[in-house]
Length: 296
Image (tube, rainbow, N blue to C red; front, side):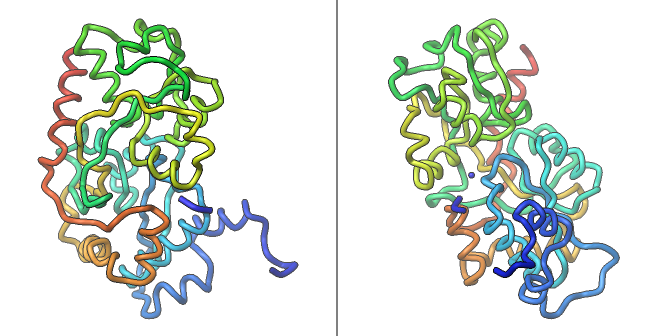
């Protein structure tokens, strides 16, 4: 969802664990010169909807958020959307960058903090992709395929396709020859590019960014269909917390990211323009799909 010593430097895997456990001392000094004393660090969750596997990006994001909140920030990564969403709803983490599907599903228990701006929009699309030489121009042309989904709680990587099938009285298990979840949009692209899957449902933003950063991979796939424009995966917090000082700092920090050198670096790695305030109505088309699938 971006680009990628001394003898005592820890291995990369150990460095990642150190980062997610609380960050490096050097980063803490850079990010929070006036640290406020707190019982625990601010915990910010990330789901696989984003390109979060790059250590450089994670370090820069943590540093920027720590400075914006004037205190320590801990990034919390999990393999599935459900793990992050359940922690957010339960108040076990303070805020998270989630998907529009769980935001709609738990609407009464979540509040909108900010929405990313990508190519001048606060919206994005779901793509259906297939092998570069595969025929077809619509969902109906994928019947019998081995199809890769991203996550069962993903809007672009599952819900959109699921709802499209429901409109014609079909279900994934009967329409496709076989389906599987990759638990990452990058992995959907990899599955289709390698021939492990004949087609896949993927976040259009991720596919477009990968076209810039990994063109040799996306060139082995082809976009055969794009959805309507839907609310971009938002940053959310638990209901009732929007006016808390730490959440207010987070919201201001996200809004001001494009005007800050370190923030600009983060946005550059993410290929985003910035973050904006938005109305929850932005996610109505996703809510409509949730209702459609619920009736199926």
